[in-house]
Amino acid sequence: MKISYITTYDASDIHSWSGSANAIAKMLERQNEEVNYIGNLSCRFNQLFKLKKKIYTFLSGKKFLLSREPFIIKQYARQIKSKLKPDFNIVFSPSSLPIALLEVNKPKIIYTDATFAGMLDFYSNFSNLSSESIKKGNYIEQKALESSQLIIYSSDWAAKTAIENYNVKPEKIKVVPFGANIDCKRNLDDIRNIINNRSSSELNMLFLGVDWIRKGGNTAVKIATGLNKLGLNTKLHIAGIRKLPFNDIPDFIINYGFVDKATEEGRRKIEELFSKCHFLLVPSLAEAFGIVFCEANSFGLPSISTNVGGITTAIKDNINGKTFSLNADISEWCNYIFNVFSDKTRYNDLCMSSFREYETRLNWEVAGRTIMNFIKEI
Image (cartoon, rainbow, N blue to C red; front, side, top):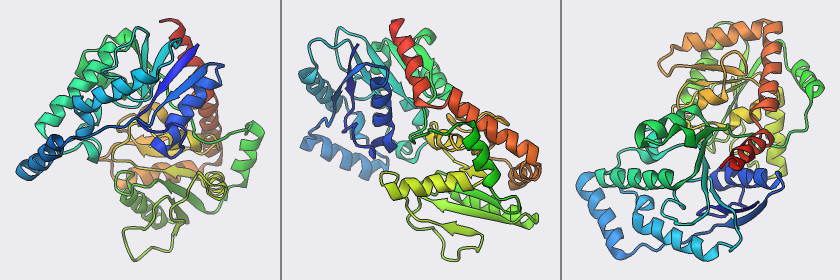
Protein backbone atom coordinates (compact mmCIF):
# COMPACT_ATOMS: atom_id res chain seq x y z
CA MET A 1 0.00 0.00 0.00
CA LYS A 2 1.30 3.46 -0.91
CA ILE A 3 0.42 6.00 1.75
CA SER A 4 0.61 9.77 1.31
CA TYR A 5 1.39 11.01 4.81
CA ILE A 6 0.26 14.63 5.22
CA THR A 7 1.40 17.18 7.77
CA THR A 8 1.70 20.95 7.62
CA TYR A 9 5.16 20.69 9.22
CA ASP A 10 8.16 18.38 8.76
CA ALA A 11 7.07 15.01 10.16
CA SER A 12 10.67 13.80 10.28
CA ASP A 13 11.37 16.37 13.02
CA ILE A 14 10.90 14.58 16.33
CA HIS A 15 10.27 17.91 18.05
CA SER A 16 7.06 18.46 16.04
CA TRP A 17 3.99 17.53 18.09
CA SER A 18 6.30 15.97 20.71
CA GLY A 19 7.48 13.45 18.14
CA SER A 20 4.05 11.87 17.70
CA ALA A 21 3.69 12.65 13.98
CA ASN A 22 7.05 11.02 13.32
CA ALA A 23 6.17 8.03 15.50
CA ILE A 24 2.90 7.48 13.61
CA ALA A 25 4.69 7.62 10.24
CA LYS A 26 7.33 5.14 11.39
CA MET A 27 4.55 2.94 12.75
CA LEU A 28 3.06 2.74 9.24
CA GLU A 29 6.45 2.01 7.70
CA ARG A 30 7.01 -0.88 10.09
CA GLN A 31 3.83 -2.46 8.73
CA ASN A 32 5.75 -2.81 5.44
CA GLU A 33 3.85 0.04 3.86
CA GLU A 34 5.35 2.64 1.54
CA VAL A 35 5.03 6.10 3.09
CA ASN A 36 5.45 9.25 1.02
CA TYR A 37 5.93 12.28 3.25
CA ILE A 38 4.18 15.49 2.22
CA GLY A 39 4.81 18.34 4.63
CA ASN A 40 6.36 21.74 5.21
CA LEU A 41 3.23 23.28 3.71
CA SER A 42 3.40 27.03 3.39
CA CYS A 43 0.63 29.55 3.74
CA ARG A 44 0.50 33.21 2.86
CA PHE A 45 -1.57 35.58 4.91
CA ASN A 46 -2.64 38.58 2.89
CA GLN A 47 -2.87 41.98 4.53
CA LEU A 48 -6.66 41.77 4.81
CA PHE A 49 -6.47 38.76 7.15
CA LYS A 50 -3.69 40.28 9.24
CA LEU A 51 -5.71 43.49 9.61
CA LYS A 52 -8.84 41.52 10.43
CA LYS A 53 -7.04 39.68 13.22
CA LYS A 54 -5.80 42.93 14.74
CA ILE A 55 -9.25 44.52 14.60
CA TYR A 56 -10.95 41.47 16.17
CA THR A 57 -8.39 41.31 18.96
CA PHE A 58 -8.53 45.03 19.66
CA LEU A 59 -12.31 45.42 19.62
CA SER A 60 -13.40 42.21 21.32
CA GLY A 61 -10.37 41.03 23.24
CA LYS A 62 -10.98 37.62 21.66
CA LYS A 63 -8.48 35.44 19.82
CA PHE A 64 -8.70 35.11 16.06
CA LEU A 65 -7.33 31.82 14.68
CA LEU A 66 -5.76 32.30 11.27
CA SER A 67 -4.98 28.56 11.18
CA ARG A 68 -8.71 27.74 10.82
CA GLU A 69 -9.36 30.15 7.95
CA PRO A 70 -10.68 28.32 4.83
CA PHE A 71 -8.37 30.60 2.83
CA ILE A 72 -5.40 28.88 4.50
CA ILE A 73 -6.81 25.36 4.33
CA LYS A 74 -7.40 25.75 0.57
CA GLN A 75 -3.74 26.67 0.16
CA TYR A 76 -2.79 23.43 1.90
CA ALA A 77 -5.07 21.43 -0.39
CA ARG A 78 -3.53 22.92 -3.55
CA GLN A 79 0.00 22.18 -2.36
CA ILE A 80 -0.86 18.62 -1.36
CA LYS A 81 -2.47 17.92 -4.73
CA SER A 82 0.62 19.09 -6.54
CA LYS A 83 2.80 16.71 -4.50
CA LEU A 84 0.64 13.58 -4.55
CA LYS A 85 2.14 10.70 -6.49
CA PRO A 86 -0.22 9.34 -9.17
CA ASP A 87 -0.18 5.80 -7.76
CA PHE A 88 -0.96 6.59 -4.11
CA ASN A 89 -3.60 4.43 -2.40
CA ILE A 90 -4.65 6.50 0.61
CA VAL A 91 -4.17 9.90 2.20
CA PHE A 92 -3.26 9.65 5.88
CA SER A 93 -2.88 12.57 8.28
CA PRO A 94 -2.38 13.00 12.04
CA SER A 95 -4.48 16.16 11.80
CA SER A 96 -7.81 17.11 10.29
CA LEU A 97 -6.52 20.53 9.17
CA PRO A 98 -4.36 19.89 6.07
CA ILE A 99 -6.80 17.50 4.38
CA ALA A 100 -10.10 19.14 5.37
CA LEU A 101 -10.68 20.69 1.92
CA LEU A 102 -8.56 18.24 -0.06
CA GLU A 103 -10.56 16.61 -2.84
CA VAL A 104 -9.16 13.25 -3.96
CA ASN A 105 -10.68 10.07 -5.36
CA LYS A 106 -8.87 7.86 -2.82
CA PRO A 107 -9.71 7.28 0.86
CA LYS A 108 -8.73 9.91 3.42
CA ILE A 109 -7.81 8.75 6.91
CA ILE A 110 -7.28 10.82 10.05
CA TYR A 111 -5.50 9.57 13.17
CA THR A 112 -5.36 12.19 15.89
CA ASP A 113 -6.07 12.95 19.54
CA ALA A 114 -8.85 15.56 19.53
CA THR A 115 -11.51 17.44 17.61
CA PHE A 116 -11.79 21.21 17.39
CA ALA A 117 -14.94 21.10 19.54
CA GLY A 118 -13.17 18.97 22.13
CA MET A 119 -10.29 21.42 22.43
CA LEU A 120 -12.54 24.49 22.60
CA ASP A 121 -12.15 26.13 26.03
CA PHE A 122 -10.15 23.05 27.12
CA TYR A 123 -6.62 24.07 26.14
CA SER A 124 -5.57 27.69 26.62
CA ASN A 125 -4.78 28.06 22.89
CA PHE A 126 -8.42 27.31 22.15
CA SER A 127 -9.90 29.52 24.85
CA ASN A 128 -11.41 33.02 24.51
CA LEU A 129 -11.86 32.60 20.75
CA SER A 130 -13.87 34.98 18.61
CA SER A 131 -17.27 33.77 17.41
CA GLU A 132 -16.00 33.81 13.83
CA SER A 133 -13.00 31.61 14.67
CA ILE A 134 -15.30 29.16 16.46
CA LYS A 135 -17.65 29.07 13.48
CA LYS A 136 -14.86 28.53 10.96
CA GLY A 137 -13.05 26.05 13.19
CA ASN A 138 -16.17 23.90 13.41
CA TYR A 139 -16.75 24.26 9.66
CA ILE A 140 -13.24 23.03 8.82
CA GLU A 141 -13.54 20.15 11.28
CA GLN A 142 -16.93 19.17 9.86
CA LYS A 143 -15.59 19.14 6.29
CA ALA A 144 -12.60 17.02 7.31
CA LEU A 145 -14.70 14.43 9.12
CA GLU A 146 -17.40 14.26 6.46
CA SER A 147 -14.91 13.71 3.65
CA SER A 148 -12.80 11.07 5.45
CA GLN A 149 -13.54 7.39 5.10
CA LEU A 150 -11.89 6.42 8.39
CA ILE A 151 -11.39 8.55 11.50
CA ILE A 152 -9.21 7.15 14.26
CA TYR A 153 -8.84 8.79 17.65
CA SER A 154 -6.46 7.99 20.47
CA SER A 155 -9.20 8.11 23.10
CA ASP A 156 -12.87 7.44 23.74
CA TRP A 157 -13.22 11.09 24.80
CA ALA A 158 -12.14 12.38 21.38
CA ALA A 159 -14.37 9.90 19.57
CA LYS A 160 -17.34 10.99 21.66
CA THR A 161 -16.79 14.67 20.83
CA ALA A 162 -16.77 13.84 17.11
CA ILE A 163 -20.07 11.99 17.30
CA GLU A 164 -21.79 14.51 19.57
CA ASN A 165 -20.58 17.72 17.91
CA TYR A 166 -20.25 16.78 14.24
CA ASN A 167 -22.86 14.06 13.86
CA VAL A 168 -20.27 11.66 12.45
CA LYS A 169 -21.48 8.14 11.78
CA PRO A 170 -20.13 5.98 14.63
CA GLU A 171 -19.09 3.23 12.20
CA LYS A 172 -16.54 5.60 10.63
CA ILE A 173 -14.84 6.15 13.98
CA LYS A 174 -12.33 3.87 15.70
CA VAL A 175 -10.29 4.28 18.88
CA VAL A 176 -6.64 3.23 18.90
CA PRO A 177 -4.48 4.53 21.78
CA PHE A 178 -1.17 6.17 20.96
CA GLY A 179 2.07 4.41 21.85
CA ALA A 180 5.19 5.39 23.74
CA ASN A 181 7.67 7.67 21.96
CA ILE A 182 10.55 5.85 23.60
CA ASP A 183 12.46 2.71 22.68
CA CYS A 184 11.60 -0.33 24.75
CA LYS A 185 13.35 -3.68 24.60
CA ARG A 186 12.51 -4.48 28.19
CA ASN A 187 10.94 -7.79 29.15
CA LEU A 188 9.22 -8.99 32.31
CA ASP A 189 12.51 -9.90 34.01
CA ASP A 190 13.87 -6.42 33.28
CA ILE A 191 10.77 -4.85 34.80
CA ARG A 192 11.04 -7.03 37.91
CA ASN A 193 14.64 -5.90 38.36
CA ILE A 194 13.65 -2.25 37.92
CA ILE A 195 10.90 -2.59 40.53
CA ASN A 196 13.16 -4.41 43.00
CA ASN A 197 15.81 -1.69 42.68
CA ARG A 198 13.38 1.07 43.66
CA SER A 199 13.74 2.35 47.20
CA SER A 200 11.56 0.77 49.87
CA SER A 201 12.19 3.53 52.44
CA GLU A 202 11.76 6.64 50.28
CA LEU A 203 8.93 7.47 47.88
CA ASN A 204 10.11 9.00 44.61
CA MET A 205 7.53 10.58 42.31
CA LEU A 206 8.19 12.06 38.88
CA PHE A 207 6.54 15.15 37.42
CA LEU A 208 7.40 15.30 33.71
CA GLY A 209 6.21 18.06 31.38
CA VAL A 210 7.05 21.49 29.98
CA ASP A 211 3.77 23.26 30.82
CA TRP A 212 3.70 23.76 34.59
CA ILE A 213 0.14 25.08 34.79
CA ARG A 214 -1.63 22.74 32.36
CA LYS A 215 0.22 19.68 33.64
CA GLY A 216 -0.82 20.46 37.21
CA GLY A 217 2.56 21.28 38.72
CA ASN A 218 1.09 23.12 41.71
CA THR A 219 -1.10 20.13 42.55
CA ALA A 220 1.89 17.79 42.31
CA VAL A 221 3.77 19.90 44.87
CA LYS A 222 0.74 19.88 47.20
CA ILE A 223 0.51 16.09 46.95
CA ALA A 224 4.20 15.65 47.75
CA THR A 225 3.82 18.06 50.66
CA GLY A 226 0.83 16.11 51.96
CA LEU A 227 2.67 12.78 51.78
CA ASN A 228 5.59 14.17 53.75
CA LYS A 229 3.14 15.44 56.39
CA LEU A 230 1.75 11.89 56.62
CA GLY A 231 5.23 10.81 57.63
CA LEU A 232 6.21 9.23 54.32
CA ASN A 233 9.67 10.38 53.21
CA THR A 234 8.78 11.71 49.74
CA LYS A 235 10.83 13.25 46.94
CA LEU A 236 9.28 14.96 43.92
CA HIS A 237 11.52 14.82 40.84
CA ILE A 238 10.66 17.53 38.30
CA ALA A 239 11.86 17.35 34.69
CA GLY A 240 10.92 19.48 31.72
CA ILE A 241 10.40 22.86 33.37
CA ARG A 242 13.02 25.43 32.39
CA LYS A 243 12.40 27.50 35.54
CA LEU A 244 10.12 26.67 38.42
CA PRO A 245 7.51 29.39 39.07
CA PHE A 246 8.58 29.92 42.68
CA ASN A 247 11.79 30.95 44.41
CA ASP A 248 11.65 29.05 47.69
CA ILE A 249 12.04 25.46 46.53
CA PRO A 250 11.16 22.91 49.22
CA ASP A 251 13.97 20.49 50.08
CA PHE A 252 11.87 17.53 48.91
CA ILE A 253 11.88 18.83 45.31
CA ILE A 254 14.66 17.80 42.93
CA ASN A 255 14.56 19.89 39.75
CA TYR A 256 16.39 18.77 36.60
CA GLY A 257 15.26 21.64 34.40
CA PHE A 258 14.42 21.08 30.74
CA VAL A 259 15.46 17.62 29.54
CA ASP A 260 15.76 17.17 25.76
CA LYS A 261 14.72 13.65 24.74
CA ALA A 262 16.25 14.28 21.31
CA THR A 263 19.72 13.97 22.87
CA GLU A 264 21.36 10.82 24.18
CA GLU A 265 22.00 12.53 27.52
CA GLY A 266 18.35 13.56 27.78
CA ARG A 267 17.10 10.09 26.95
CA ARG A 268 19.37 8.53 29.57
CA LYS A 269 18.13 10.96 32.22
CA ILE A 270 14.46 10.24 31.44
CA GLU A 271 15.08 6.49 31.50
CA GLU A 272 16.90 6.83 34.82
CA LEU A 273 13.96 8.72 36.33
CA PHE A 274 11.36 6.30 34.93
CA SER A 275 13.34 3.43 36.47
CA LYS A 276 14.03 5.07 39.83
CA CYS A 277 10.66 6.62 40.62
CA HIS A 278 7.65 4.81 42.08
CA PHE A 279 4.91 6.84 40.37
CA LEU A 280 4.58 9.23 37.47
CA LEU A 281 2.55 12.12 38.90
CA VAL A 282 1.08 14.44 36.25
CA PRO A 283 -2.25 15.86 37.56
CA SER A 284 -3.15 17.62 34.30
CA LEU A 285 -5.86 20.27 34.08
CA ALA A 286 -6.28 19.44 30.38
CA GLU A 287 -4.91 16.55 28.34
CA ALA A 288 -6.00 15.13 25.00
CA PHE A 289 -4.24 11.82 25.70
CA GLY A 290 -0.84 11.80 27.42
CA ILE A 291 1.85 9.74 25.69
CA VAL A 292 4.01 10.15 28.77
CA PHE A 293 1.74 7.66 30.55
CA CYS A 294 2.52 5.03 27.90
CA GLU A 295 6.24 5.76 28.26
CA ALA A 296 6.07 5.42 32.04
CA ASN A 297 4.24 2.10 31.76
CA SER A 298 7.02 0.75 29.52
CA PHE A 299 9.21 0.89 32.65
CA GLY A 300 6.57 -0.65 34.91
CA LEU A 301 5.90 2.82 36.33
CA PRO A 302 2.24 3.44 37.32
CA SER A 303 0.74 6.81 36.35
CA ILE A 304 -1.26 9.10 38.62
CA SER A 305 -3.33 11.81 36.94
CA THR A 306 -6.77 13.37 36.52
CA ASN A 307 -9.83 11.97 34.75
CA VAL A 308 -10.00 14.74 32.15
CA GLY A 309 -9.92 14.55 28.34
CA GLY A 310 -8.46 11.35 26.93
CA ILE A 311 -6.46 10.37 30.02
CA THR A 312 -8.89 7.65 31.08
CA THR A 313 -8.20 5.76 27.85
CA ALA A 314 -4.48 5.78 28.67
CA ILE A 315 -4.86 5.10 32.41
CA LYS A 316 -7.13 2.36 33.71
CA ASP A 317 -7.75 2.70 37.44
CA ASN A 318 -5.81 0.20 39.56
CA ILE A 319 -4.42 -1.48 36.44
CA ASN A 320 -1.73 0.92 35.28
CA GLY A 321 -2.32 3.81 37.66
CA LYS A 322 -5.14 5.92 39.01
CA THR A 323 -7.07 9.03 37.96
CA PHE A 324 -8.78 11.54 40.22
CA SER A 325 -11.36 14.26 39.72
CA LEU A 326 -10.10 17.81 39.35
CA ASN A 327 -12.19 18.56 42.45
CA ALA A 328 -10.69 15.74 44.52
CA ASP A 329 -9.21 16.79 47.83
CA ILE A 330 -5.43 16.48 48.07
CA SER A 331 -5.96 13.94 50.86
CA GLU A 332 -7.58 11.54 48.37
CA TRP A 333 -4.46 11.56 46.19
CA CYS A 334 -2.17 11.23 49.21
CA ASN A 335 -4.09 8.36 50.82
CA TYR A 336 -4.15 6.33 47.62
CA ILE A 337 -0.43 6.77 46.94
CA PHE A 338 0.45 6.16 50.60
CA ASN A 339 -1.61 2.96 50.80
CA VAL A 340 -0.32 1.49 47.53
CA PHE A 341 3.32 2.30 48.29
CA SER A 342 3.01 0.87 51.81
CA ASP A 343 1.71 -2.47 50.50
CA LYS A 344 4.66 -4.03 48.65
CA THR A 345 2.61 -6.78 47.02
CA ARG A 346 -0.07 -4.36 45.86
CA TYR A 347 2.55 -1.95 44.51
CA ASN A 348 4.48 -4.67 42.67
CA ASP A 349 1.28 -6.00 41.11
CA LEU A 350 0.36 -2.50 39.93
CA CYS A 351 3.80 -2.09 38.36
CA MET A 352 3.62 -5.42 36.54
CA SER A 353 0.11 -4.77 35.22
CA SER A 354 1.30 -1.31 34.11
CA PHE A 355 3.96 -2.95 31.96
CA ARG A 356 1.41 -5.42 30.59
CA GLU A 357 -0.79 -2.49 29.55
CA TYR A 358 2.17 -1.09 27.65
CA GLU A 359 2.90 -4.45 26.02
CA THR A 360 -0.67 -5.22 24.99
CA ARG A 361 -2.21 -1.82 24.36
CA LEU A 362 -0.01 1.25 24.66
CA ASN A 363 2.72 0.75 22.04
CA TRP A 364 3.04 1.69 18.38
CA GLU A 365 3.38 -1.90 17.14
CA VAL A 366 -0.08 -2.80 18.43
CA ALA A 367 -1.45 0.50 17.12
CA GLY A 368 0.04 -0.12 13.67
CA ARG A 369 -1.38 -3.60 13.28
CA THR A 370 -4.79 -2.48 14.50
CA ILE A 371 -4.91 0.51 12.16
CA MET A 372 -3.83 -1.50 9.11
CA ASN A 373 -6.63 -3.98 9.81
CA PHE A 374 -9.12 -1.10 9.86
CA ILE A 375 -7.71 0.30 6.61
CA LYS A 376 -8.10 -3.05 4.86
CA GLU A 377 -11.80 -3.01 5.73
CA ILE A 378 -12.44 0.26 3.86
